[in-house]
Length: 183
Image (cartoon, rainbow, N blue to C red):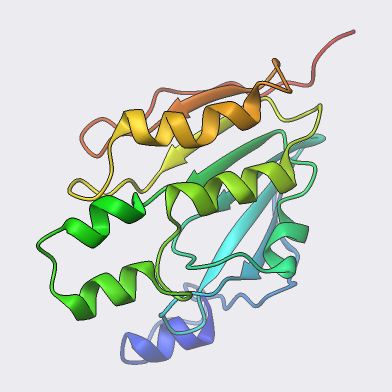
C-alpha cells in the first residue's frame, strides 16, 4: 500500500515483513510478475492503480479515478487487457436521489469515471494488441450495462480483435485468458 493509505487507516503497527510501501513509479517484482503502481486523481490518501506485466503480457487496472491525466494514460499504453472503471452515467447520476454533495463527489475530478470519460480513456489506449476490455466498478443505481456497452462499443469497432466484458456487482466477470496472438 502507499504511505498515504497506511496513514489514512491509522498507521497500524505491522510486522516489517508484512508491510511494503508502494509509490508511483516503483517497480515491484514478485516472482515473474512485475507491478508498476501509478497515481490517479481520486479523493483518497495517495491512491494508486496498477499495471501488471508478466511474460510479455500486460494488464492495466484503472478504478477509483475521477478524471484523465497524461500520467495515467501513459501507464495504460500498450496493454493486452484493461480493467476500466465505468462507474456512472452522468444523466442517471444527476437524476439520482443521492444528496448534492455525493453527486458532486462522484462526478468530480477526484471522484469516479463516468461512462463517457471511460470511453475517452479507451480511445487513448486502443491499439492493435488490446485483446480485452473489462468495464468494472459500475454503480448499481447510477449505471446500466446497456449504457456502458453503448459508451464503449463504438470505440472498439476499429479493432475487431478486442472483446468487451462487463463486470457486474453480484458475479464479477469470468476468467479471461491472456495470450499473445500467433500470426
